[in-house]
Image 1 (cartoon, rainbow, N blue to C red):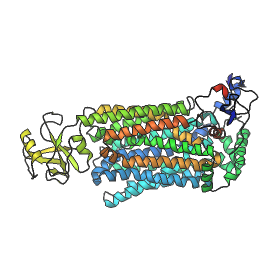
Image 2 (tube, rainbow, N blue to C red; image 1 turned 180 degrees about the vertical axis):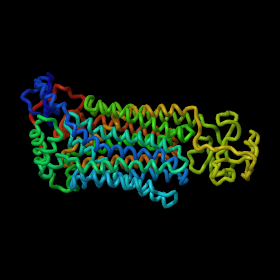
Image 3 (cartoon, one colour; image 1 turned 120 degrees about the vertical axis):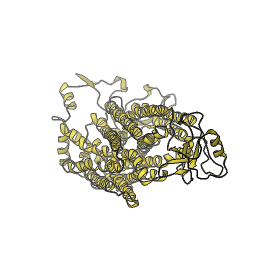
Image 4 (cartoon, rainbow, N blue to C red; image 1 turned 90 degrees about the horizontal axis):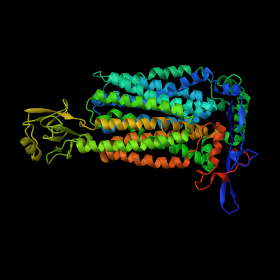
Length: 626
């Protein structure tokens, strides 16, 4: 026989003690004065068995729902490998590379905005159907693009279209799962969507690696394959139910009862849960009748809902601004920056990073309903801070170790070493004599328009490779075409510290995946009351995508102007500030119903650390819907 304590709704109240000190105390239904004195209630073995036997239909709903997460992860990550092929076939510069990555993110933010009215008026299920259809169209459009300037615009258009589908699904699926899931496993089922995201990222890495061996056109398969799971989800959702809480909000209690009976074990007291949902919605009946803009105004004018909104938007922004998608979108590019020269090796190692992300997300799946959201997120972010610092240190060593470079006085590529040279889109590094690692050798940083640079073969041409000529060449007042010696150019500089960078990336993923990966999506799906859930979750999701856009569209330029190590140390500082924010703001929501979570924000931002536990007393139950 197991012992359990009935969940208690709480409300913080300020009172004055005998020593004239204001103290915050807790309201809750209880005849006793202290939490420690509360007698635990006994739960029968039969009731416990009912609680743990989850119907198979729940897993069917989850399996088809998380296809959205899979597509989210796949399409935002497949670009990492496709970018290398696209750069060669379309001769992309840094801005074009950032654009093709970021246009999907920008349109995903738009999709998340559109998701709020769609969820309110149409429901969760039709919104997911719409997202599946839009994604399928975008994937087919990209795969069919020709290798011309018209094809380039078709790819951009397709990336924008799939972004809308990703945005619609990214804000809707966590809500749908949270509203359908039993309270005791809501965290795990919501994390399942994030696990699907990381699975999609890993599959994207494998697909990128497989098709990287094609000499041309591998990117078509990378983009087009995603249409298959999107179409499967589109068909499946014609047969899956609507969220019971959305149905109750539309006064369709009988349909909601039938859905709950499908989603709960045999013998489970469906009437009790349905009554709790109905009561919660009726208490907020006035808010339920408002349009989206009035609901947003209500959120902004009610303190506890404003706190929830600040937390929801804040935790989503921290997830992105701590640099996760610089790792996932640009993993092969980052590894090449660190000195991995071969394209296939860089893409393959990127797949290894994605696999680590998937495996350690499953750790979060196991722990989130056991350890709790708060401790998992804070410990995860602490590891992220350490690993970002190590990434910056690795790139600092790569830069310090780079071979020197020289240039003529009239060259615009006046960089001091190979690492600084190759960051510049218009400059190329050529090593004169010996191997790259020959310490007696020096290289030259030449401009794309230099007569010494052959763009079609990506080589430099010199007349005499001796050290004497190196010095004369670098000091020459004019650069004339000489044709005796041909040497290979370097897009990125080989380095003895390449594996240190890979190790730091893996530490980052091991730290990020269990907590900061699934945690923000789980928390934002829980913290808003039913009437504000679509609007609040939409605002949080838009914040995530806009933060994602900011990082992805600026990453390559930030690495150029702040240096690569400066960029990652900047992300370190942001992550440290985010840890302090979450330490103060993030409550524990483990084991509570969605209706109970709302009351957590009626207390202080965080319980004052100087007040002893014995001064927090239970007085009465809070039923205030506002």
